Image (cartoon, rainbow, N blue to C red; front, side, top):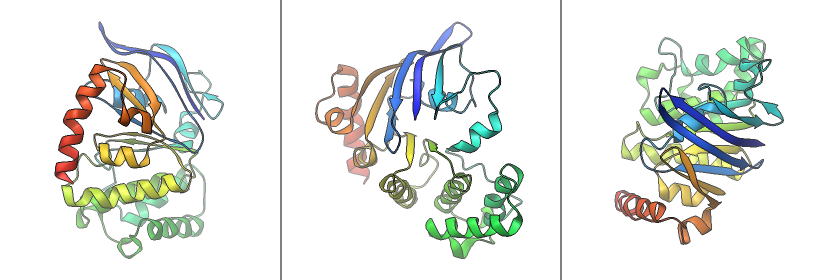
Length: 247
């Protein structure tokens, strides 16, 4: 489904990604974790070309991301992105935020878009908030609307870039519950997160990154039971202690 092939990227003389390779199978959930500045979000954003890369390739559902003739709008409709800062249009209601790309990109008529949007709002538990503007919604509600907006494009995969980092602690669980539900329904996902208790619950694979490199790529059970690298062991000893105390 998603193949990352020896991807490298520089910012000037700084190598932010260093020959990263990984494969995410259809219907699986890959969690990207590691210390801040390790390249997780940069790698995630390369998958739908929100970031370019200098070497290697990424193939999504048979489509080369770096090919010159790749239709980026079509790519981004097939690979949905959910950001940490929600990125909702403040002057549009929840319903209108979900309708917009369906009508502009998929060319759905308004009635069809509204029907799809309402079904998705029901799915994320926000049908009664359809006509409210983002400013009237909590952070957790806004993020669930952002997830519904991504799902409205009928993507083959979803990318989540620290989807709970901008939320108050009591709002985190309502967003994570939606992601867990998507995982149970077989949605292919890549998730950058520091929520290790959540990662342990939902991940099929864990990609642990440090200094721009993927230094561990293992099934979730094995990674949490006995990480190979000392860097991953150090990271988990700090993060898991914080995660469980907070929860």
